[in-house]
Length: 463
Image (tube, rainbow, N blue to C red; front, side):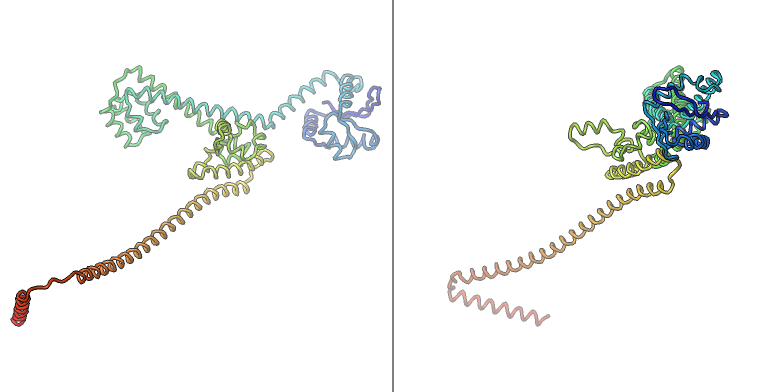
């Protein structure tokens, strides 16, 4: 930690100092340590190796303790480096006899120097450790979800408490936060709405809601409550409002942190949904290693295992169901859009985990592709609907034409049947034997027929 040293040793002999470079200050030592961590060589290290190893000991076997430093030396100088158990044993032997091997070193100063370097280097590792940031997000989203459950539980208690005095209020004011603000002012006491001073405080309500509350307070079926009960209701409402404010601040914090560590991923799925997925996976790197199909069903593990056990249909989405793109999709299209969002989210989270900065162009393309997928599903659905309508219309027209034809055939057949029936009746009449009438009857009929004929002619002439 105090400098760069080069020792020469042979099997069974004590190491001998060849060269030693002492660091000028703590900053130089810190930069050297940081470069070793990243597998890089500083200018000081390169100069030290060139002047001592390459000129005099280039044919010797070179032993180092750190494998990253060994690889960096191989890449830069093309020398054979060894990092094994033997190198570690030699290193321990040097550490035990360091003051004897390097007389320039002072034990007290060396301890102070090592402690200072250790603090700086540990601070640097914690600062740039992605898992430490992931842990912050993990704790934050867990607290956010717990606060949601707590708020819902408290609001249920408040409503059950206030239903005895003013049950109509929960039907008029459906927003939970506004309902809590109302209870904070009136304390569940419906008679308070008749007080002009209290009504003046209800500026967060619309005039229509105020009028409805005032009318319902006059005809409410609720009972009167004591002042102590009203005060406790107001206190509970105040507590719920403070929880709402804390939840909003936590959401702002999660959004800011997600924009910093995973900007592209949070833009695709949203900061809160992204934080839930990250928390479920354990870290950003683990989430980056997961395939798109896993990201799609993260959060629905219980349903998945139940479906596999019962050999039923597996779920199509988990936490990603609350993503804005999936929420806006139709009921039948949510599965398709969720799969497309998961595919693009997998690409973005890998970029965020392994690269710094925002992927503006690719992000815009990914969001556009997801939107087009959603629109495409809707257009395809509309096209199918239009084709179905056209098919129905064509079938109706065809049916109408068939009906017209059938009606014409039926009428023609009716006429033919009627004609045939008349012919058959005439044949029957002809086939019947004719009865011979007496001559007197025949004369009378002819005479009558002649008279009728003359009378008819006379009327026509008269007209």
